[in-house]
Image 1 (cartoon, rainbow, N blue to C red):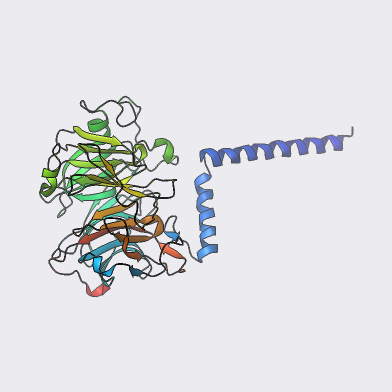
Image 2 (cartoon, rainbow, N blue to C red; image 1 turned 45 degrees about the vertical axis):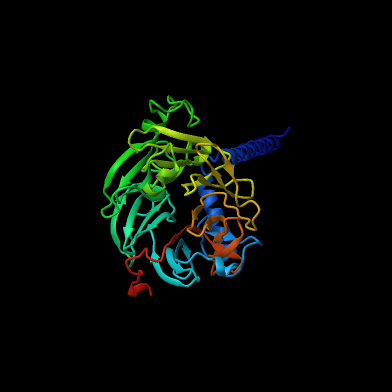
Length: 429
Protein backbone atom coordinates (compact mmCIF):
# COMPACT_ATOMS: atom_id res chain seq x y z
CA UNK A 1 0.00 0.00 0.00
CA UNK A 2 1.48 3.32 -1.06
CA UNK A 3 2.12 6.15 1.40
CA UNK A 4 -0.24 8.48 -0.51
CA UNK A 5 -3.04 5.92 -0.39
CA UNK A 6 -2.50 5.42 3.36
CA UNK A 7 -2.79 9.18 3.90
CA UNK A 8 -6.07 9.27 1.97
CA UNK A 9 -7.45 6.43 4.08
CA UNK A 10 -6.37 8.23 7.28
CA UNK A 11 -7.93 11.51 6.14
CA UNK A 12 -11.20 9.81 5.13
CA UNK A 13 -11.30 7.93 8.43
CA UNK A 14 -10.74 11.17 10.35
CA UNK A 15 -13.51 12.90 8.34
CA UNK A 16 -15.83 9.96 9.02
CA UNK A 17 -15.08 10.04 12.75
CA UNK A 18 -15.55 13.83 12.94
CA UNK A 19 -18.79 13.61 10.94
CA UNK A 20 -20.05 10.88 13.22
CA UNK A 21 -19.16 12.89 16.31
CA UNK A 22 -20.87 16.00 14.90
CA UNK A 23 -23.94 13.94 14.02
CA UNK A 24 -24.12 12.39 17.49
CA UNK A 25 -23.61 15.78 19.14
CA UNK A 26 -26.37 17.20 16.92
CA UNK A 27 -28.72 14.47 18.12
CA UNK A 28 -27.78 15.28 21.72
CA UNK A 29 -28.38 19.01 21.15
CA UNK A 30 -31.87 18.30 19.76
CA UNK A 31 -32.77 15.72 22.39
CA UNK A 32 -31.36 17.40 25.50
CA UNK A 33 -31.45 21.07 24.35
CA UNK A 34 -27.71 21.46 25.02
CA UNK A 35 -25.65 24.40 23.76
CA UNK A 36 -26.02 25.74 21.06
CA UNK A 37 -29.70 24.72 20.93
CA UNK A 38 -31.08 28.14 21.97
CA UNK A 39 -28.97 30.23 19.50
CA UNK A 40 -29.88 27.85 16.66
CA UNK A 41 -33.55 27.93 17.65
CA UNK A 42 -33.50 31.74 17.76
CA UNK A 43 -31.80 32.04 14.35
CA UNK A 44 -34.21 29.51 12.83
CA UNK A 45 -37.22 31.39 14.26
CA UNK A 46 -35.88 34.69 12.91
CA UNK A 47 -35.30 33.33 9.39
CA UNK A 48 -38.70 31.62 9.39
CA UNK A 49 -40.37 34.79 10.66
CA UNK A 50 -38.82 36.92 7.90
CA UNK A 51 -39.76 34.37 5.23
CA UNK A 52 -43.37 34.03 6.41
CA UNK A 53 -44.32 37.49 7.57
CA UNK A 54 -41.70 39.89 6.23
CA UNK A 55 -40.78 41.00 9.76
CA UNK A 56 -39.26 39.62 12.95
CA UNK A 57 -42.21 38.32 14.96
CA UNK A 58 -41.51 37.14 18.53
CA UNK A 59 -42.33 33.51 19.31
CA UNK A 60 -45.98 32.99 20.34
CA UNK A 61 -47.06 36.50 19.25
CA UNK A 62 -48.74 35.47 15.99
CA UNK A 63 -51.15 32.56 15.64
CA UNK A 64 -52.82 31.03 12.61
CA UNK A 65 -56.54 31.45 13.16
CA UNK A 66 -58.34 28.08 13.19
CA UNK A 67 -61.11 27.61 10.60
CA UNK A 68 -63.76 27.85 13.33
CA UNK A 69 -62.61 31.37 14.29
CA UNK A 70 -64.41 34.33 12.68
CA UNK A 71 -62.41 36.62 10.37
CA UNK A 72 -64.01 39.78 11.67
CA UNK A 73 -62.72 41.79 14.62
CA UNK A 74 -66.04 41.82 16.47
CA UNK A 75 -68.90 39.43 15.76
CA UNK A 76 -72.16 39.31 17.72
CA UNK A 77 -74.11 36.05 17.67
CA UNK A 78 -76.79 36.80 20.28
CA UNK A 79 -77.26 40.56 20.48
CA UNK A 80 -79.98 40.43 23.15
CA UNK A 81 -77.72 38.40 25.47
CA UNK A 82 -74.58 40.57 25.47
CA UNK A 83 -73.60 41.70 28.96
CA UNK A 84 -73.56 45.51 28.99
CA UNK A 85 -70.60 47.35 30.48
CA UNK A 86 -66.96 47.82 29.54
CA UNK A 87 -64.38 45.30 28.35
CA UNK A 88 -60.60 45.65 28.58
CA UNK A 89 -58.40 43.42 26.43
CA UNK A 90 -54.62 43.05 26.54
CA UNK A 91 -52.37 41.75 23.78
CA UNK A 92 -50.33 42.79 20.78
CA UNK A 93 -51.88 45.85 19.14
CA UNK A 94 -51.25 45.98 15.40
CA UNK A 95 -52.47 49.59 15.28
CA UNK A 96 -49.65 50.80 17.55
CA UNK A 97 -47.12 47.98 16.97
CA UNK A 98 -46.83 47.58 20.73
CA UNK A 99 -48.25 45.44 23.46
CA UNK A 100 -51.30 47.33 24.68
CA UNK A 101 -54.53 47.14 26.58
CA UNK A 102 -57.62 48.64 25.02
CA UNK A 103 -60.99 49.53 26.49
CA UNK A 104 -64.17 48.78 24.55
CA UNK A 105 -67.89 48.94 25.14
CA UNK A 106 -70.36 46.10 24.64
CA UNK A 107 -70.79 47.14 20.99
CA UNK A 108 -67.12 46.49 20.25
CA UNK A 109 -66.26 50.18 19.94
CA UNK A 110 -62.78 51.12 21.13
CA UNK A 111 -62.80 53.85 23.79
CA UNK A 112 -59.21 54.03 25.00
CA UNK A 113 -55.75 52.46 24.65
CA UNK A 114 -52.97 51.98 27.18
CA UNK A 115 -49.45 51.45 25.81
CA UNK A 116 -47.86 48.61 27.81
CA UNK A 117 -44.44 48.59 26.15
CA UNK A 118 -41.75 47.15 28.38
CA UNK A 119 -38.74 49.44 27.84
CA UNK A 120 -40.27 52.66 29.24
CA UNK A 121 -40.71 50.74 32.50
CA UNK A 122 -37.31 49.02 32.51
CA UNK A 123 -34.73 50.45 30.06
CA UNK A 124 -32.34 47.53 30.70
CA UNK A 125 -34.78 45.20 28.96
CA UNK A 126 -36.46 42.02 30.22
CA UNK A 127 -34.25 39.72 32.29
CA UNK A 128 -35.52 36.60 30.55
CA UNK A 129 -35.74 38.06 27.07
CA UNK A 130 -39.47 38.46 26.31
CA UNK A 131 -41.35 41.73 26.73
CA UNK A 132 -44.94 40.44 26.46
CA UNK A 133 -47.19 41.43 29.39
CA UNK A 134 -49.41 38.77 30.95
CA UNK A 135 -51.13 40.05 34.09
CA UNK A 136 -52.98 43.34 34.24
CA UNK A 137 -55.62 45.03 36.33
CA UNK A 138 -57.47 48.22 35.48
CA UNK A 139 -58.18 50.50 38.47
CA UNK A 140 -61.21 52.82 38.81
CA UNK A 141 -59.09 55.93 38.20
CA UNK A 142 -58.11 54.59 34.75
CA UNK A 143 -54.60 53.50 35.70
CA UNK A 144 -53.35 49.95 35.05
CA UNK A 145 -51.26 47.43 36.99
CA UNK A 146 -49.14 45.23 34.72
CA UNK A 147 -46.48 42.52 35.00
CA UNK A 148 -44.38 40.50 32.54
CA UNK A 149 -43.67 36.77 32.96
CA UNK A 150 -40.19 37.05 31.41
CA UNK A 151 -39.38 40.57 32.57
CA UNK A 152 -38.15 41.87 35.90
CA UNK A 153 -40.55 44.68 36.69
CA UNK A 154 -44.15 45.23 37.77
CA UNK A 155 -45.64 48.67 37.26
CA UNK A 156 -48.62 50.92 37.56
CA UNK A 157 -49.17 53.24 34.59
CA UNK A 158 -51.67 56.09 34.42
CA UNK A 159 -54.35 56.52 31.77
CA UNK A 160 -51.77 58.22 29.54
CA UNK A 161 -49.48 55.17 29.90
CA UNK A 162 -46.93 57.03 32.03
CA UNK A 163 -45.36 55.09 34.92
CA UNK A 164 -46.77 55.95 38.35
CA UNK A 165 -44.38 53.50 40.01
CA UNK A 166 -42.25 50.50 39.06
CA UNK A 167 -41.28 47.61 41.30
CA UNK A 168 -38.27 45.41 40.52
CA UNK A 169 -38.76 41.65 40.53
CA UNK A 170 -40.04 38.86 38.30
CA UNK A 171 -43.75 39.28 39.02
CA UNK A 172 -45.66 36.91 36.81
CA UNK A 173 -48.95 35.44 35.63
CA UNK A 174 -51.47 37.07 37.94
CA UNK A 175 -52.39 40.27 39.76
CA UNK A 176 -55.53 39.92 41.87
CA UNK A 177 -57.33 42.18 44.32
CA UNK A 178 -57.03 41.16 47.97
CA UNK A 179 -58.62 42.67 51.07
CA UNK A 180 -58.20 46.22 52.38
CA UNK A 181 -57.43 47.65 48.94
CA UNK A 182 -54.33 45.51 48.45
CA UNK A 183 -53.37 43.19 45.58
CA UNK A 184 -51.61 39.83 45.35
CA UNK A 185 -49.04 38.70 42.77
CA UNK A 186 -46.59 35.84 42.29
CA UNK A 187 -42.90 36.82 42.41
CA UNK A 188 -40.34 34.34 41.12
CA UNK A 189 -36.72 34.03 42.18
CA UNK A 190 -35.31 35.64 38.97
CA UNK A 191 -37.66 33.57 36.81
CA UNK A 192 -41.31 32.53 36.68
CA UNK A 193 -40.04 28.94 36.53
CA UNK A 194 -38.30 29.21 39.90
CA UNK A 195 -38.58 26.67 42.69
CA UNK A 196 -38.56 29.60 45.11
CA UNK A 197 -41.67 31.66 44.41
CA UNK A 198 -43.24 34.22 46.70
CA UNK A 199 -46.82 35.35 47.18
CA UNK A 200 -46.56 39.11 47.45
CA UNK A 201 -49.30 41.33 48.88
CA UNK A 202 -48.75 44.95 47.84
CA UNK A 203 -50.28 48.42 47.95
CA UNK A 204 -51.49 49.42 44.44
CA UNK A 205 -51.06 53.13 45.19
CA UNK A 206 -47.35 52.88 45.93
CA UNK A 207 -46.23 49.38 44.96
CA UNK A 208 -44.88 48.80 48.46
CA UNK A 209 -44.97 45.23 49.80
CA UNK A 210 -47.47 44.72 52.62
CA UNK A 211 -46.80 41.03 53.27
CA UNK A 212 -45.09 38.10 51.59
CA UNK A 213 -44.75 34.36 52.10
CA UNK A 214 -42.82 31.65 50.32
CA UNK A 215 -43.92 28.64 48.29
CA UNK A 216 -41.14 26.24 49.31
CA UNK A 217 -40.48 27.20 52.93
CA UNK A 218 -44.01 28.13 54.01
CA UNK A 219 -46.15 25.79 51.90
CA UNK A 220 -44.21 22.81 50.52
CA UNK A 221 -42.27 22.46 53.80
CA UNK A 222 -45.13 23.68 55.97
CA UNK A 223 -45.68 21.80 59.21
CA UNK A 224 -49.34 21.18 58.40
CA UNK A 225 -48.93 20.49 54.69
CA UNK A 226 -50.02 16.95 53.71
CA UNK A 227 -47.08 14.88 52.49
CA UNK A 228 -46.38 15.02 48.74
CA UNK A 229 -49.35 17.27 47.95
CA UNK A 230 -46.88 19.23 45.78
CA UNK A 231 -45.62 16.02 44.15
CA UNK A 232 -42.18 16.35 45.77
CA UNK A 233 -40.86 15.61 49.23
CA UNK A 234 -40.10 18.47 51.57
CA UNK A 235 -36.43 17.46 51.52
CA UNK A 236 -36.17 17.80 47.73
CA UNK A 237 -32.92 19.59 46.69
CA UNK A 238 -34.56 22.86 45.65
CA UNK A 239 -32.47 25.17 43.46
CA UNK A 240 -32.12 28.91 42.93
CA UNK A 241 -31.65 30.39 39.45
CA UNK A 242 -30.10 33.58 38.10
CA UNK A 243 -32.56 33.53 35.17
CA UNK A 244 -34.86 31.09 33.36
CA UNK A 245 -33.02 27.75 32.96
CA UNK A 246 -32.52 26.45 29.43
CA UNK A 247 -34.20 23.13 30.28
CA UNK A 248 -37.39 24.55 31.78
CA UNK A 249 -39.23 21.22 31.81
CA UNK A 250 -36.55 19.68 34.00
CA UNK A 251 -36.64 22.37 36.69
CA UNK A 252 -40.21 23.66 36.47
CA UNK A 253 -41.53 21.65 39.42
CA UNK A 254 -44.70 23.64 40.15
CA UNK A 255 -45.37 26.47 37.65
CA UNK A 256 -47.56 28.64 39.89
CA UNK A 257 -49.71 30.65 37.52
CA UNK A 258 -52.75 32.19 39.12
CA UNK A 259 -54.29 33.60 42.28
CA UNK A 260 -57.87 34.30 43.26
CA UNK A 261 -58.93 35.85 46.56
CA UNK A 262 -62.17 34.95 48.33
CA UNK A 263 -63.97 38.28 48.61
CA UNK A 264 -66.25 39.05 51.58
CA UNK A 265 -69.40 39.06 49.42
CA UNK A 266 -68.78 35.42 48.42
CA UNK A 267 -67.41 34.09 51.72
CA UNK A 268 -70.76 32.75 52.97
CA UNK A 269 -70.95 30.49 49.86
CA UNK A 270 -67.90 28.51 51.06
CA UNK A 271 -68.47 26.99 54.48
CA UNK A 272 -64.88 25.85 55.02
CA UNK A 273 -63.14 29.00 53.85
CA UNK A 274 -62.89 32.61 55.00
CA UNK A 275 -62.68 35.97 53.25
CA UNK A 276 -59.10 36.61 52.19
CA UNK A 277 -58.22 32.95 51.57
CA UNK A 278 -56.15 32.43 48.44
CA UNK A 279 -57.07 30.09 45.60
CA UNK A 280 -53.82 29.02 43.92
CA UNK A 281 -53.02 27.15 40.71
CA UNK A 282 -49.91 25.03 40.02
CA UNK A 283 -50.01 24.06 36.35
CA UNK A 284 -47.20 21.52 36.23
CA UNK A 285 -48.79 19.24 38.85
CA UNK A 286 -52.46 19.92 37.98
CA UNK A 287 -52.96 21.22 41.51
CA UNK A 288 -55.55 23.75 42.70
CA UNK A 289 -55.46 24.65 46.40
CA UNK A 290 -57.03 27.03 48.92
CA UNK A 291 -54.51 28.52 51.37
CA UNK A 292 -54.85 30.66 54.48
CA UNK A 293 -52.42 33.57 53.83
CA UNK A 294 -51.78 34.11 57.55
CA UNK A 295 -51.25 30.57 58.84
CA UNK A 296 -50.21 29.02 55.47
CA UNK A 297 -52.56 26.10 56.16
CA UNK A 298 -53.87 24.34 53.06
CA UNK A 299 -57.62 24.17 53.59
CA UNK A 300 -58.47 22.27 50.40
CA UNK A 301 -56.58 20.84 47.43
CA UNK A 302 -57.29 18.79 44.33
CA UNK A 303 -55.15 17.45 41.47
CA UNK A 304 -57.51 17.32 38.47
CA UNK A 305 -59.76 16.41 36.69
CA UNK A 306 -58.35 19.50 34.92
CA UNK A 307 -54.99 19.25 33.14
CA UNK A 308 -52.28 21.96 32.98
CA UNK A 309 -54.85 24.46 34.22
CA UNK A 310 -55.00 28.24 34.62
CA UNK A 311 -57.24 30.70 36.38
CA UNK A 312 -59.27 28.95 39.12
CA UNK A 313 -61.99 31.26 40.45
CA UNK A 314 -64.42 31.30 43.36
CA UNK A 315 -67.94 31.55 41.90
CA UNK A 316 -71.19 32.87 43.34
CA UNK A 317 -72.82 29.41 43.44
CA UNK A 318 -70.23 27.99 45.86
CA UNK A 319 -68.20 26.20 43.19
CA UNK A 320 -64.63 26.68 42.09
CA UNK A 321 -64.30 27.06 38.31
CA UNK A 322 -61.05 26.11 36.55
CA UNK A 323 -59.76 26.91 33.05
CA UNK A 324 -58.56 23.44 32.05
CA UNK A 325 -56.05 23.98 29.24
CA UNK A 326 -55.88 20.24 28.49
CA UNK A 327 -52.52 20.86 26.83
CA UNK A 328 -51.91 18.34 24.07
CA UNK A 329 -55.57 17.25 23.88
CA UNK A 330 -56.71 19.89 21.33
CA UNK A 331 -59.68 21.18 23.33
CA UNK A 332 -59.87 23.26 26.49
CA UNK A 333 -62.71 23.31 29.01
CA UNK A 334 -64.14 25.26 31.93
CA UNK A 335 -64.61 22.74 34.75
CA UNK A 336 -66.38 23.45 38.04
CA UNK A 337 -66.00 21.60 41.33
CA UNK A 338 -67.78 21.97 44.66
CA UNK A 339 -65.05 21.99 47.34
CA UNK A 340 -67.32 20.44 49.99
CA UNK A 341 -69.32 17.82 48.08
CA UNK A 342 -66.80 17.12 45.33
CA UNK A 343 -69.48 17.51 42.63
CA UNK A 344 -67.94 18.17 39.20
CA UNK A 345 -69.64 20.02 36.35
CA UNK A 346 -68.80 20.87 32.76
CA UNK A 347 -71.68 23.21 32.00
CA UNK A 348 -70.41 24.32 28.58
CA UNK A 349 -69.97 20.86 27.10
CA UNK A 350 -73.13 20.94 24.95
CA UNK A 351 -72.72 24.50 23.69
CA UNK A 352 -71.41 25.55 20.29
CA UNK A 353 -68.13 26.96 21.61
CA UNK A 354 -65.02 24.99 20.71
CA UNK A 355 -61.77 26.51 21.95
CA UNK A 356 -58.22 25.46 22.66
CA UNK A 357 -55.41 27.19 24.54
CA UNK A 358 -52.50 24.94 25.37
CA UNK A 359 -51.18 27.61 27.75
CA UNK A 360 -52.39 30.74 29.53
CA UNK A 361 -56.11 31.61 29.42
CA UNK A 362 -58.57 33.49 31.64
CA UNK A 363 -62.31 33.36 32.27
CA UNK A 364 -64.82 35.52 34.14
CA UNK A 365 -68.42 34.84 35.15
CA UNK A 366 -70.63 37.85 34.36
CA UNK A 367 -73.72 39.14 36.22
CA UNK A 368 -76.15 37.88 33.56
CA UNK A 369 -74.74 34.34 33.78
CA UNK A 370 -72.54 34.60 30.68
CA UNK A 371 -68.85 33.73 30.74
CA UNK A 372 -65.99 35.72 29.18
CA UNK A 373 -63.25 33.37 27.95
CA UNK A 374 -59.79 34.38 26.74
CA UNK A 375 -58.20 32.00 24.20
CA UNK A 376 -54.57 33.16 23.76
CA UNK A 377 -53.57 30.37 21.36
CA UNK A 378 -56.35 31.50 19.01
CA UNK A 379 -55.92 35.24 19.54
CA UNK A 380 -59.52 35.84 20.57
CA UNK A 381 -61.92 36.48 23.43
CA UNK A 382 -65.37 34.88 23.40
CA UNK A 383 -68.44 35.57 25.50
CA UNK A 384 -70.75 32.56 25.87
CA UNK A 385 -74.02 31.79 27.59
CA UNK A 386 -74.16 29.64 30.72
CA UNK A 387 -74.77 26.69 28.37
CA UNK A 388 -71.72 27.41 26.21
CA UNK A 389 -73.30 29.06 23.16
CA UNK A 390 -71.40 31.97 21.61
CA UNK A 391 -72.73 35.46 22.35
CA UNK A 392 -69.90 37.49 20.82
CA UNK A 393 -66.36 37.00 19.62
CA UNK A 394 -63.49 39.52 19.60
CA UNK A 395 -60.60 38.61 17.29
CA UNK A 396 -57.24 40.35 17.49
CA UNK A 397 -56.72 40.17 13.71
CA UNK A 398 -53.17 40.79 12.54
CA UNK A 399 -52.17 43.57 10.15
CA UNK A 400 -49.81 41.09 8.48
CA UNK A 401 -52.59 38.94 7.06
CA UNK A 402 -56.22 38.15 7.81
CA UNK A 403 -55.11 34.52 8.18
CA UNK A 404 -53.51 35.39 11.51
CA UNK A 405 -54.58 36.64 14.91
CA UNK A 406 -52.19 38.41 17.23
CA UNK A 407 -51.73 37.07 20.74
CA UNK A 408 -54.23 38.25 23.35
CA UNK A 409 -53.47 37.21 26.91
CA UNK A 410 -56.08 38.80 29.12
CA UNK A 411 -59.54 40.35 29.23
CA UNK A 412 -61.81 41.74 31.94
CA UNK A 413 -65.41 42.96 32.09
CA UNK A 414 -66.39 46.00 34.20
CA UNK A 415 -69.83 47.34 35.21
CA UNK A 416 -70.94 50.69 33.82
CA UNK A 417 -70.24 52.45 37.14
CA UNK A 418 -66.70 51.06 37.56
CA UNK A 419 -64.74 54.09 36.38
CA UNK A 420 -64.64 57.45 38.09
CA UNK A 421 -64.68 58.74 34.49
CA UNK A 422 -63.91 57.00 31.21
CA UNK A 423 -60.13 56.94 30.73
CA UNK A 424 -58.84 59.36 28.10
CA UNK A 425 -55.58 60.95 27.10
CA UNK A 426 -54.90 63.39 24.27
CA UNK A 427 -51.89 61.35 23.15
CA UNK A 428 -53.87 58.22 22.35
CA UNK A 429 -57.34 59.42 21.38
